[in-house]
Amino acid sequence: MAERRRLYTKSELKSKLRKKPDPSQMSRGARSHVAAKPKQIRKTIFRLLSYMGVYRFALLFITLTLMLATFAQLLVPVLFSIALDEYILVDDFEGVYRIGVLIIILALTGSVVRFVSRFVMVRISQRVVKSLRKDAFGKLLRAPVSYFDEKGSGDIVSRLSNDVELISNSLGQTVLETINSSIVLLGALGLMFYLNWALGLVVILFLPLMVLFTVKISKKTRKGFKQQQTHLAGLNGIVEENISGMKAVKLYTQEAAFTEEFREENDQLKKAGFMAQFYAGLIWPFIHFMNNVIFLAVIGIGAFLHLAVSASFVTIGEIAGVSQYSRQFIIPISNLAQLFNQLMQGVAGAERVFELIDAPDEYQADGNGTLETFQGAIDFESVTFGYTEEPVLEGIDFEADPGQLIAIVGPTGGGKTTTIKLLNRFYDLDAGTIRIDGTDIRSLKKDELRRRIGIVLQDTHLFKGTVFENIHYGDFTASREAVEHAAKLANAHDFIVKLPEGYETLVYEGGQNLSQGERQLISIARTMLSQPDLLILDEATSNVDTRTEQKIQESTDLLMEGRTSVVIAHRLQTIQRADKILVIRQGRLVETGTHESLMARGGFYRKLHRAQFGS
Image 1 (cartoon, rainbow, N blue to C red):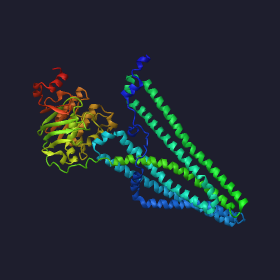
Image 2: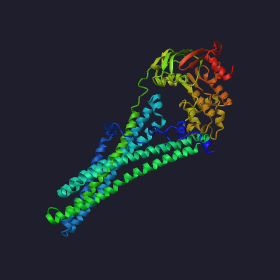
Image 3: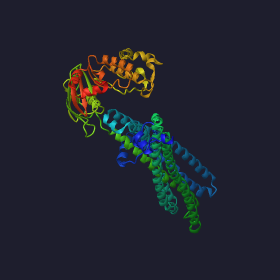
Image 4: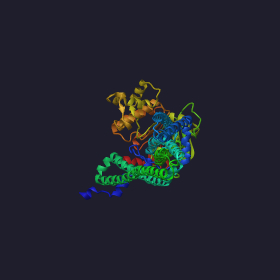
C-alpha cells in the first residue's frame, strides 16, 4: 500500500504539481512579504522626499517642534545639576521649588509638543501613501496588457498593499524617530561637554564599541528576518497551493509527500525565526548593560576627580548631570541602527512601487482618430506579431465585409486568440496593418476602438457586487429596464429571478456561487447592454453542457444580428454557417473559405472535421 501511495518522488511531484513560490510574485493569499535590498537608495529616497516636498512647511514645523521638545527634555539634567550644586547643598528650598516647577513645565511642554508633532507626521505619511497608492493604481489602469503578463497578479497586489504598507510604516516612524534621536544624540553630547568636558570624554570613549556592536548585530538581524520572511513566504505558498489544489493532492494520494514538505519548510521557518529573534534580542540587553557600565564609569571617575583632583574641577552636580546625559546619549545610537534597517525596508518597498508608477503607459502611443460611422469592415494585411522574438502570427491576410460572420479555427496555440487581442490593440503589431472601415486602427483612440467592440470570452469574469451591477457594467448610463431587457435577450432573466435576491443577489468573487453557464449568460447580457458594433466570441460555449450551450447559442445568434462577428471555436458544428472560416495553424493562415468549400478542398480543415465527427 505504501508503494501505491508513492506515485511520484518528491522532486517529481514538485515539478508536476507546484512551482516554488517567488516571494516577489506572491499571490493574494500569501500574506507575508519579503523586502528586497534596495538597489538605488539615494535616487529612491530623493524621489520619496519629492512626494513629501508638498508638505515641506509641515515637516519644518515638525523639526522645530521636536527640537523644542528635545531641548526641554535635555534641560532637565542641567537644571538638576544646578539644583544640586546651588540649592540642595546649601539648603535653599525656595530655589529647589523653582527648579522643580520649571522641570514640570518643561516635561508638560515636551509631551504636548511631541504629541502634536507625531499627529502632524502621521497625517503627512498617510497623505504621501495615499498619493503613492493613487499614482500606482492610476498607472495600473493605463499599463499595457503585456505588463500584467510579465508581472503577474500576485506581484502587482503585493506592490499596492505590502510595499505601500512598508513605506507607510517607514515614514510614520522612521522620519520622526530619526529626527528625534539625532537631536537627542547631538544635544546630549553637547550638554555633557558643557557641564564637564572631562566626564564627556569618559562617555565618548565607549562610543566606538557601542557603534561596532550595534552595526554587526543589526546586519545579522536584518539577514535573519529576511530569511524568516523567505521561509514564511514558502510556507504560505505550500498552504495556498494545497488548499487550491486539494483535489489534485487527494486524487494522486500525495498527502504524505506534502505533509513532509510542509514539515521541512516549517522547521526551516522555526530555525530562521529563532536566529532572527535571538540576534534582535541581543541589542537591548547589550545597550542596557553598556548604559549601566557608562553610568558607573561616569560616577566612579567623576568621584575620583572630585576627591583626588579638585572639587571645583568636577562638582557633584556635574557628575549627576553627565551621568543622566550618558543614559540619554546611548539609547539613540541603538535606535538609529534599528531605524536604518526599517528605512531600508521602506526604501525597498518604495523602489517596487516606483517601478509600477514608471511602467509603460499604453496611451503614450495612442492614436487620436475616431470613427464617425462604423460599418464593420475588417482588413488584416500581412499581420505579423510575437510576444517575444519568436512570431506567434506571421503574414496573416484576410478581409471581412460588414455584417459577416468570420470563424477562426485551428489547433490550440496556433494564434487564434492572439488575433482578437491585436484587433483590440491589447498589443501592437510587429509588422503589417489592421484596418476597420479602411482606417488603420493604430490611428484610432484605443478607448474609442474598444467601446465599439464587444467580447464574450471562454472564461467569464464577474465582479463583486450584485447581478444587476455586473450586467450594468456594460453601460453605466442604462436604466434598470434596459438591464432587464438585455438579460431577457441573453436568456438570463429566467434564472436570475429565481436567485434568492433576484437581480440584487450578491456575486461572490469570480462568480463562484453561479454555474459556468449562468456566468456566461450574464456576460452575454452585459455585452448586449453595451450594444457593440463589432462582436467577438472566444470559445463562448466550450465549458458548458449541451442544454446551456443551446441557450448561449440562441443568445449569441441574436447578438450577432446585423453586426460583423468574429468567432473562435473548437466545436466546428457551431461555425458551419459562417460566411468565412479562417484556418490558422502554427501562426499562419493555411486555409480560407466556407465550410462547404473547405470540406471539398480536403485540406487541414477537413482533417479537423474528421477528427471531431469521424467523417
